[in-house]
Length: 113
Length: 112
Figure (cartoon, rainbow over the protein chains, first blue to last red):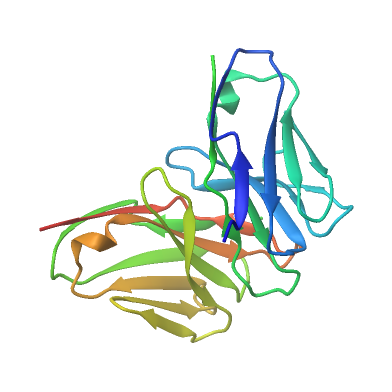
């Protein structure tokens, strides 16, 4: 059972470089999410997609863009990476039916020098 | 704006003891989730609480929800080392479709 797959698992970037984090789910879920996790701050929502073809900003969207490529895939792009974006990034998905928990990927550990 | 606060943030306890983690939130909601995270790992869903007075139990963990007090608790009974992890509560906002706001997490260490 693959669930939610994130690539890459680790990445080091230099300030100003761009990068796309990939996320794919095989559970036929409608909704997908991108979070960042920083020490002592829990998870903060960056962007989400309630259904294929829609995306919306979360709590901390500045410096990021997203693409819901199809129902399975939801990518997160850093156009010009900054040290403040050093974090662990989690992708999650959820069925369209509400009241169900989100399923999380294993995370991408991103360091920006 | 929905805010979620957990306490304590760090908890070290002995095996066999009981303890409670608290999750307070600032605006009306009746949908609350508890997750577990092991170091360097992903988040695993533990409980889904969907109404006032809801209580869920799994092994040594029991979660409850009081929507009037805007409070959820995660109670650990007779703790064992395997329960060492970080526990997060997350509250679903009524404003935004299916958005979760997470607490800061409680890092639980259970010593033999």
